[in-house]
Image (cartoon, rainbow over the protein chains, first blue to last red):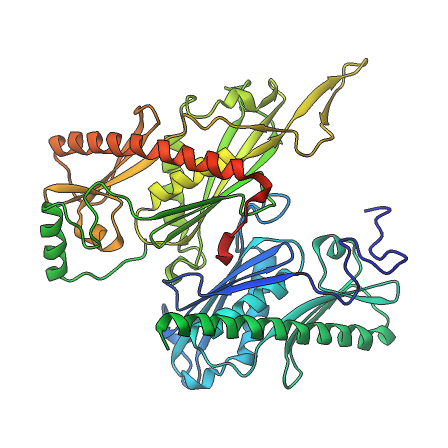
Length: 245
Length: 291
């Protein structure tokens, strides 16, 4: 996109945010009654739905069953109308399979799978509208859905993307910023212990800038943690009022 | 569809209730469950709608793309359907598990919309034989609680009502090369006339009577169902029998009559609600999945 400045002289991004500012986040837990746990999150224009089934008996082949912990089964799927250009297949292509593996890796680090030997936990994530930060929205939605399902977690998993433009780290990239071809870092963090569940970076970056970029992403994840925590507490309050406690 | 286990005693209970025109949740045989419709849920699309019928949750997105018209119909655009049974609904739909059901639903939709009377396909033509609009109607199944076809057809009607196709002009310059020009105003759009878009009514035969809008438990008690696609005027565009059992001809005629009556009665309130939602314009508070 020739001539499109990702960072203006006054320090504002294309959509008017400051470099360390996150997009508006709105989330809801318990969206679907039939699933064990479900959640919906909107990060700016990116909309993601996550649904959790389990823990239940291992479906399909018994050989997948692990004797000491639960098997985690994830699927990442994008609705065909989610992207600007229509996507032909919702899942099964290379990008979706890669995202599925990333999700699995992220949540295996966070869920206390040793408590459920010989069982299976399914996490299905659906992107309804993609505007950058797809992986982060999925992870955040899936965290809320796992909390809604009542599955014990080591800690919240908060994810955020970050980029680097003109010596400034930008946090929570939108689609325009992602497709400009610059550096892109995806980070999934367990906030209290500051442990990284997943780190992934594309494109070149000078070694000196890496620490600054990771710090910016970590701080953004902690801000996100505050938002998700508030959503969970509000939901809990709503549910306990409805139950009459 | 997600299966429910229903015991013999429950089946007998449901069948006896239906014979007396009383269903488990208190409805009559011709009543629909509570339906919620919202349009313009996904902003990346040309039009979208979300329908909740009981626990059944359907999201439809319509995307308009320019393409070449079909050879046998050079003056018309076309409609392409795709149904995605997402794993959200039930773990059995993971991977390729939902493909069978998705293909079955998509094929039925093609048949329902196949004739030229439902949507004015000629209005989708930009330049005969060269350019036309193809509307990709993508259906996403989020939750299954029986009666998918009805909810899907209502969602498609609402999404097509909401669709805004940008107005384009063909400009021919001196050398004869044609160019397509998009108007500068992003709100200058063409809307579709959905007056004749049919709604599908599914009738399940339980015992000697038939019910409209069956839940999963009621479906487990019925042997066969009939799908009737009815337009606003009461014209039938498609009739299809689904299910493993057999139906005798008199009950088929009775079911078609009920389908016609119920279908006709569905269109008027639907159109009113869509107009009302449209008239709220920008002031409308969009709820989506957050409500």
